[in-house]
Amino acid sequence: MRSVIYSMGVSLDGYIVGPDGGFAWTEPGDDVFRFVTDEIRGVGVHLMGRRLYETMLYWETADQDPSLDAPTLEWAALWKPLPKVVFSTTLTAVQGNARLVSGGLAEEVERWRAEPGEGDIAIGGAALAAEAAELGLIDEYRPRVHPVLVGGGIPFFPRRERRVDLELVENRTFGSGVACLRYRVAR
Image (cartoon, rainbow, N blue to C red):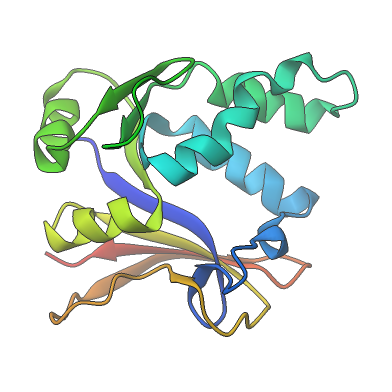
């Protein structure tokens, strides 16, 4: 059965976006970029909220930018054909290999888990990840912890009133100081 993963860059104090709405501090160096590229190879579908979808729209045409280097073009070539499911109540259409839905996260996850095929089900965006966590759908948390304190913003982990035990599966630290962690939810 496919695993549901939540993988994003996060500040040491726990935020994916700072109080000013910025996240430039998550821009990966070459080593972390290769790690993220390898991670996306293992994804079969990416479920995301509207804000993340709009941020990632750049990658739908990035392959047309002649100034991009080979590793960036490789990532774009992996991202563009990847099936995406966008959860939004405000969008009326999506582009690329994306499908728009307005609700039913648990049903969507179960549908993808039941379909034959390879690859994890990635959850992207804090609000959607919080909903997935509340529903007990996330199998693995994969924060890429950046050596910065941003002091507030949008948290990586949802704030909730129940404990979730995790098992450390993998950890890697890069020269840039970024620590990539992989925790499986203990069930």
